[in-house]
Image (cartoon, rainbow, N blue to C red; front, side):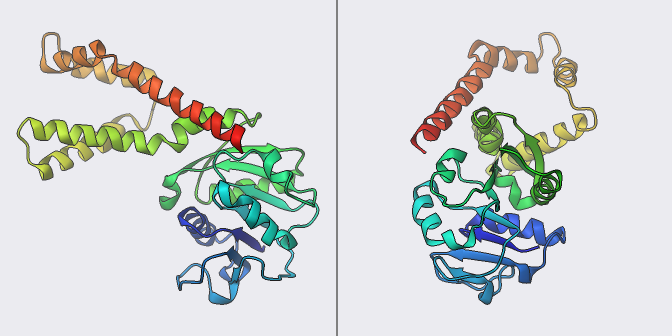
Length: 269
């Protein structure tokens, strides 16, 4: 199977790493088209790293679009020769609608819009996928296998649903790190050292999740919270402040703003 990547940033590298580790394609069969110059690495050989616009007669089984939205028009124009009618294309461009990609194509392509997240670097990405148009069963299976090589797939039936999921899956790791940072700084304010605060915050997240991981549900989360919260105790005192300040609503509002921004980007692109 021969795969092309237009664009070669961190996400491209994570995807290629997943594909190679899963043995879904050989290193010699993965090609990159990039405007930047080649820098030696373990994923792509120099002969497979082609300058955007380079002539290439290879018939690719799959083409990834991993470019910034503002670079899309130029990148697709430079590399138009690698597309054929009914080429299988996966776009991971944030906020770019399928119709925007198709409008720049001379060929009738089959396109999947995928929204991965940074956890692809450890093969734990949450991939929100939208299949535009009709795909053969074997085509869909192939694409899902490729996407599964660096994460878990969730399919949406409407492209507009991607923005709702982006607010949690795409931005989610930033929310988690924000809460971790808040725990670290709060612990420091109570007298713990920076090192102690970092270790405690990380342990709290990892080990609490380990307790509920096997049978994860909202009910289990609530039950664990009740077990820890003694009437008149320290946990109850802290949770009362969180509830009074409406911490849960602040999180919801933040995610709504994230979705709004995704919707706005979709209109632009």
